Amino acid sequence: MNRGPPEHWLFSGPFKRAELQKALGNYLSWKERYPTFFDDIAARLLPIIPLIIYRLIENDAMDAADRVLQVYSTFLHYYPLNFTFVRDILAYFYGHLPGKLILRILNILDIKKIPFSESFPQHINSSNAAMCPPLDYFATLLLGVVNHVIPALNNSSKCAAMGDFANNSTRAPHGKIQATSQPGPTNSSEGQKPYYQMQDPGTFTQLTLETAVIELLSLPVSPSQIVSSLVQIVVHIQPTLVQSSNGLHGAPASSGQGSILPTSPSGGSTDSLGATRTTPSVSGMNTSNFVSRSGYTCQQLSCLLIQACGLLLAQLPPEFHVPLYVEAARVIKESWWLTDAKRSVGELESAVSYALLDPTWAAQDNTSTAIGNIVALLHAFFCNLPQEWLEGTHLIIKHLRPVTSVVVLRIAFRIMGPLLPRLANAHALFSKTLSLLLNILVDVFGRNSQLPVSVEATEISDLIDFLHHVIHYEGQGGAVQASSKPRSEILVLFGRAAENLRPDVQHLLSHLNTDANSSIYAATHPKIVQNP
Image (tube, rainbow, N blue to C red; front, side):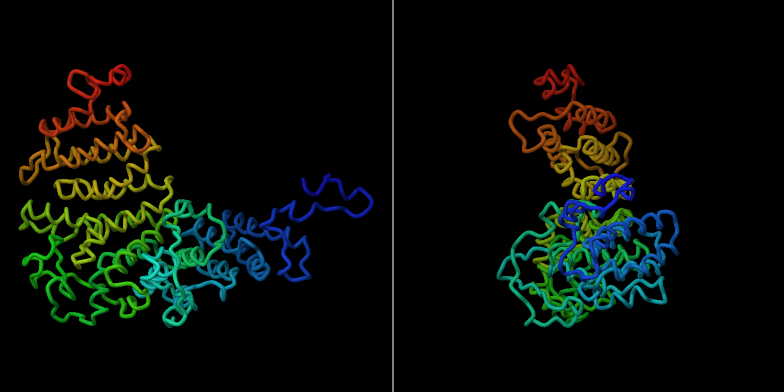
């Protein structure tokens, strides 16, 4: 349309092209900083080459794509969206690109201007492609996200290192500038977008986060290996940081501190401090200068690293989500204080209740647990995940089933519960998530379920209370008002679940029923009864 009639070559005289800004828009139009021998025809050609490369890869013409990149990679340095192109092509075709082509794609970027990790080149050029990078590499990536992406806890507690990020292992204190308290992607709408909706990074914060994403997408190892390494760091992060910062490394420690941390989350009982159980630090990970490089205390840094890990994983394509859910379920099921048959129900209830509190509490007195950390990681991951990918979160509960104890029931509710208010306006996904929670409730308190120890229905009255409030929240589409009422479809779900529950648990749900004869709630809302 911008070039006039298609038969323009039949007309005499020079062809008048539309102004470049009008043809391509401000963002893609030519700038004075480009070489003088590039005219506007070169500017018009730039957006076309990435499309050609996309089509070649889509049609498995990898060699042809490699040749095009080889010829035009220097030219593509001037493409205003080259960072977006590299990130998107690595994410969209993740798992289908040969290593040689990945290296060619990375060469589109001006490497000197991108804050890649110091060891990144050796990992992508490694002759042993099956070998996963050491945990140090992943921990350094997370520390970079903490220092440059996660908002500072407060202005005075932390200085952000903004020196030569590529040489992050040698950053000196004199290279630091005062951090700002502006919210980062964790609190902004940018953090809620899928990777393919984001433009080129306009700030150093975005550049740091998306550079870490490009690194992970370029590694010649499977997503499960990457996820497993990140989860391993997160699960044991507190004892690792405490030991490395105190220089104990296995030396005897005082109560609740150092290398022998309480591994029962009951807060440091004599049993949990026994020498028979110790909280392992992560082997093969050198975090000796992490605390000093961050400007935080061990307790603060451990929580921020969990948050950084969740944020980073949420920027990756769905191929990374499934391994995360599988690994999280494995960590929970293999936790020793859940599998230890000698533990009483009361002790496990106490332990779980403590472990599922905000992880900052556990970090303060060094009583963190694997389950507490993995739940915190999942919450950090969920809150940065776009809504269209939240349906996959159900997989973690499917891997936890069959649920046969109140302890695991509580863990499942703690994992999925915070998602429900966010889904208040996505009714189909809300109903599906709620149905999943009701199903595991039936697993534990169903008519035919066989709990090892008899548990009173009143033990889960808080979970019933949560369900009551969250369906009113969804019915209202926001904060609960005096006039709020659940949708009739939701009450039908509760009615179906109640048919399979024990009578004493049924009684707790009797007010959430569409039957006016048995439900006080339905009797006072006749419209629900008329249109079940």
